[in-house]
Image (cartoon, rainbow, N blue to C red; front, side, top):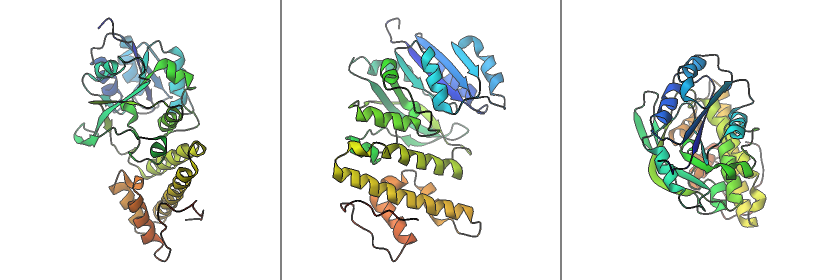
Length: 310
C-alpha cells in the first residue's frame, strides 16, 4: 500500500527475552510496507540483546542502554521516528493480523488524532483468556474516574505530530505513562477514535501479575488521574477525590495484608479476582464496609471526601 501512512512501531524492552521475539515477529508479519520498527532496550541482562541482533536487519533502529523507564525510552525513539503514525507495543504483547492496516484505515479522517482498538488477553503460552474491550469514556470526568477502565496501551495508535505536540510521555511514571498521556489528550479535547477490530494480544504472566506490580500500577494510575482534577467542575472534582480516597485506602489495606504473613489476604484476593475492581462504586464501598464495619458509607453524591489513614 504505497499510499498508506508510514507507521512507526516502538517496542520498549527490559529483560523480556521470553516474549520479545514474538513481539518483533508480530510487527514484521503484518506485511505492512510503509513501516518503521524501533526497539529500545533498557540494558537487559537476559537474552534480549541476542534476540534483537537476530532481527537487526529488519529493524530501522535499536539500542540497548540504561534509561529511567519505558517512557524515557519511548520519548528518545520519538525523536528518531519518521512515521506519520506511531504506536507503542509492549515487549510481552503481540499485534494481531492486519492490526496496522486497520489502524491506518482509521486515520483516513484527517481529524483523527489517536485511535484505540480492541484487545484480547492471553497467557504466557499465547492461550486466549478473554476479551479486552476498548470502551473510551464519554466525558473527561468519566475517563479520570475510570468509568470504562484503562485503555490497553498496545492497542493505541497516535498521530506522531500530535504526540510530539503534547510533549511526549511523562518519564517520571513507570507504568501509568500512557494513561497520563490519554488524560492529557482528553484535557485538550482530543478524544480517541474506536476501531472495532482486535489489534493486539495483551499478555498476563507472572511478572505483571505480581503483587508489587499491581499495587504500584494502581497507585500510579490514581496519581496520574488526580493531576487533572482541577479541570473538572466542583461536583465531579469531589467525586474524583472521594473515589481516589477510597481506592488508596483499599490499596493500603491490601499492602498491609501482603506485609503480614499471618494475615489472610482477603482484600488482596478480592482485588486480584476482579480486574476492573475499583472502577465500581458499589464494589469499592462493599470492600470498605468489610474493612471498617462500624464506619458509615456515604452516598456517591456527598461532598468532598474526608481524608483519613487506612
